[in-house]
Length: 336
Image (cartoon, rainbow, N blue to C red; front, side, top):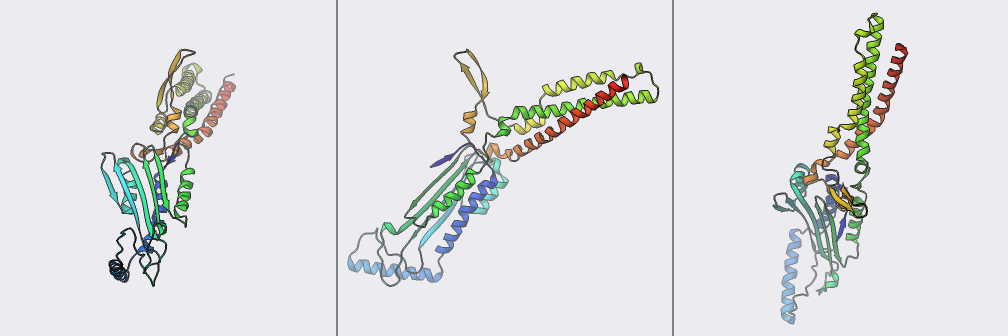
């Protein structure tokens, strides 16, 4: 059994894997489908075999003839097990039901498991009874489990000369290995991202205050108003305080987006320095996955929104800083 760590698994990614299993299942199910003629031929075959076995006193029940009416006789199953947060589990063979629950009620799901099971016989005869042995029976099984923090993959195969399980495994691994890491730059650099956002807000407030001072000074000169009667100096004080407080006060929008994304805090103690404190539990964070069900159902799109805010702040902060700087020089020019 393989376990994946430090990946972000979206609901669309789960659906892609389910689609891979369903496509393979549909192909095998169509291959093994029996018509009325097949069922009748199978009954005739079984009755004839019973007569042959009784006449020749063959009592080994592990030996049986391959059925003659199909290229390969077998069975295919695809099951979906959904375990909800209240510990109730529903097993369904209905792909549409499972995907509907995943899309519409992800916050209620604690685990979703998909199991593909296929067996069939490789050889057949149309003119004589063919006594089977275990070497001709193909078994294929794939089991995938998604919990809120874990992703497991397990597969078994027996006499799978066609390599069906390996092909499916490569496609599924291809999806899982291409998923973004959980501990990415959005999480790793969250303090600088928040600082840039706050700097953008501070630059906006300072720039607005400087422009306000410039406008007041302009109207003062235009209407020949006494400078003493125009209280524009409080605006400069406001600009300075706004800039300072914007760097100190948190950003409610970013804090809301980061809720549920960041690592837990752990306590540490350094024996040499005899100092302790709290820090991010990075190793524990990276050892888990983030699957968009249960407690992480609301995390879909949060990283994209945070990155969008950050990119806007990178542009907005210097622009407003330059506007405020230009207004300040204009004020100095008019005053002196």
